[in-house]
Amino acid sequence: MTTAASVEHHEEAGDGHHDHGHHEHHDGPFIAHHFESAEQQFDSGKLGMWLFLVQEILFFSGLFVAYIIYRNHNPEIFEAAHVHLDKWLGGLNTIVLLFSSLTMAWAVRCAQLGKNLAAVVHIVITMVCANIFLGVKAIEYTHKWEMGLFWANYYTYGQPQPDHPPYLMYISAPFIVCTLVAAFLATVSRVRESDFWFKFFLCITISFLGYFIGLGIAWAMPSSGHDDHHGGHGSHAVHAAADGHEEGHGKEGHGDSHDESHGKDDGHGHANDADHAEQGTDSGAAAMATADEPQEEPDLGGFFSIYYAMTGLHAIHILAGIVALTWLLYRTLAMHFRPNYFGPVENVGLYWHLVDLIWIYLFPMMYLIH
Amino acid sequence: MSDNHSEEHAYFSHPMPVWMLLLVFVSLVFLTVLTVVMSELTEALMIGQWELWVSMGIATLKAMLVIFFFMHVLYDKPFNKMLFFSSFLFAALFIAMTLLDTYQYSDDVTSFPTDDRPARVVGGKTVSEN
Image (tube, rainbow over all chains, first blue to last red; front, side):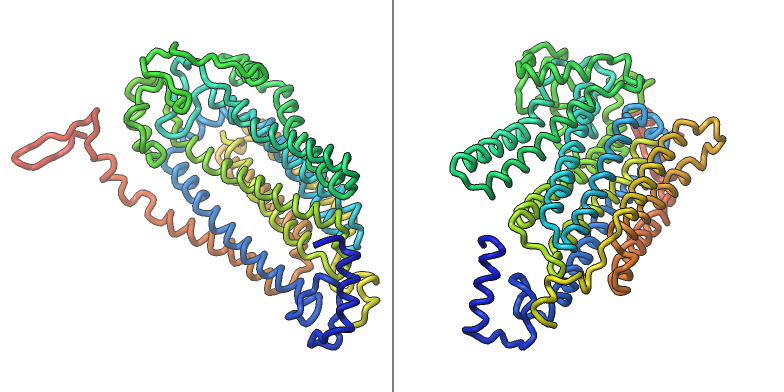
């Protein structure tokens, strides 16, 4: 598909040559033959989107049930675990997501009024916010992994932590690659004087820079103090990632042979018999992992299984949202939307608000426990 | 319906006024700050055990703002409204049904032999020490 103008031209030319089968049927280039009107097409698409969102809610509700059951049976584990979650970072991410919802709703409004270029601005801001969210989440996750706050049987908090691989570097690598590729393609488009693709890839580059903004904000945020006895982990992570050096070699106390691909297992007494650890999220994990741990520190592996499953699935939805927004970016730059055709923006917006909605519940459930 | 309709003002869309979007956003941020502050002041506010319900109530209020205004459910077709809210109904049923037998098997679980409480055999029958 080329630009809207040429498509429209083609449509107008084609109108004289063949009959569409409908007399009053000419609502623009994107209205399909089989719809009575633009409104009917819009309503059909939106109904499909609502059905998808209903499925999403039911799909997430499985995890909410897991959370509720586990919390009901083990309230003390949730009380012990909340100190490991930074409510300020969580609150920051909540506001970032709410702001992205605002700009998304605003982008829908712009598309409804046919203001494609204003919609581009709002879509790019939404994408930047999505990436900021992921950047903050990356700092949160890697900070926990460095302290051994893993899921189920991999939970090794309170034990001496061996030198860990540069988690933040691993998690950031895809974003670095995407930023560089987008910047490269923007440069190539510039050189080849393709204005459309230059704008497109420039917007993509800007949106990926949001990830690094998120890293910076989370790194600069003052720690709320509960992890002081492990102080300096956050900055250590960034330095390790920035240098990119490997320091994980054979210092762990349990004598397992070190292997990068099994970096998470290192130093954990149960690493060898924990292949099935992901399944043992409940009391089984608690019973198995207590053997060589300080008794005063409860085993929180079960909590972190649920935490990573829920926030991880949510983060995957953010990634999918970024892909959908990239598609919208292309279509708004191509000036496709107009007052009788804005369904794609509306439907991606609905999806984006649902992702926000899930986070609205995840935030108090995970971060605000007492 | 003729060609020039497409250039006219929207005839089936309902653009949200900017002031309404901004107001909703400000309310959402306010409620977020409120819920964080309340979790900080749990002791002072004497809400203790109700804290979970208060924070869930605030979250539901925020969710309603997002649903009705950002997702324009307020102006959507009744069928779409019904569809969307039915998903919450079924999620609630799912949770309620699962919670029905919460402590049904706790006797079996606590009597289950563990390393600390090994099972012993009395008169050919395995019992656990409690």
